[in-house]
Image (tube, rainbow, N blue to C red; front, side, top):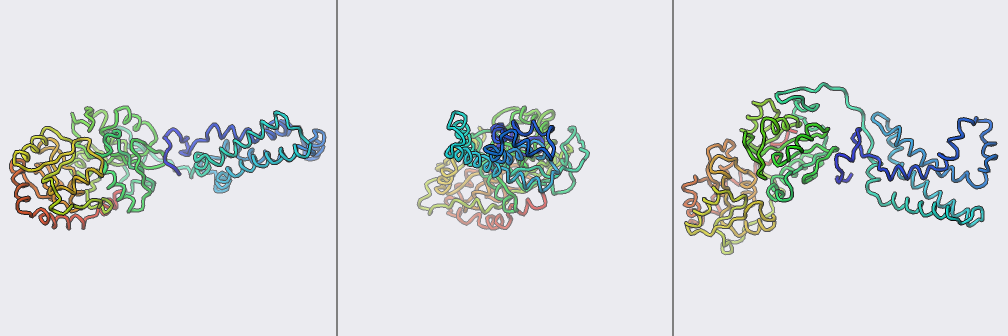
Length: 473
């Protein structure tokens, strides 16, 4: 099924709504039965049915048209009455064939009208011409509409058993949100949803692709859906802090299953990547609590949420083979000594300036970044790739920046920080802020940058991220 539908395209049974145009099509194709036969059925019995047809001159020309409208009437009845949970396999099979039923009704009516005109049983008047035109348009609609194909594939499953929602520190949770079992996702269909608009897509690119590849390797049906939430899939939101407060409020209230991949620090007064101030206690934490699960690559985030009685799991960032998509150029063609990509905060700008002052050829791609193909081009021309902290030494490490460069064969120099509880910086050549430029110069002048991080790269490749996701979702 295509994934271009919004949550409002689904009905209360979580299946695609029948479009108004399809209802109009069913009514039109059922017109002979609806207008001619059904109003008379209460006055008929089995013995006088044939006399009824003879008295109304049906046997000569209109019996075929009555029969042509019967499949469409069946479709209308199923759509109105039997497309409900626990309707059974028989009704589901009928519904799946209903597009063919409608095509049969339209084709049969068109054929009969044409035959009657050619045989002289009907005149080619305006009514016949209008019906012929409508039948042709309906056939085109039935053949070409992707929405109709998906509607007739979609049928409600069994009704879920009754359950009692639990409650936690931040109020009632959706059903299953606090399940003790690690099998939190009951749906094998997952949508990875980066929020924050197109400006942040490049910022989250490696993170989103890494999650997508890891879950796909575990057998999930995964799509990437920027800024678009699904009702038929489990939504795994990246960049939850970039959503507007009204969006998070709607998520708390609507029946949309979602998890959060939390990469922020979750503290009062924090800001999202787009600069909006977060109301942690009254907005952000209740929204996390309403999710099925919070996943984070940071242990301190998991501990913070656990203290708030919010279910969170630690999934360490690891090796993602699908992100092997760049390779260094030969040494003589690498004209950049150091390359950094990411938001150029004041702290990062100051550190980059120390590299320039040390006569190093430093290249930087500022926030929100450059397209991946250009970023990879700059990587290939660089001797060293830098991982700098966003706000001095207190901000979280961005693990996918380090791992992406490392697994593609680049030497990564990481800025030391005091709260790197996950030791992501240890995968690179770690240096404190004061000696950062000196460390970079030593690596370049010794020519050791090609071999310095070989051991760490081998260690990373032995730690696939799929292993960390196993047993979590």
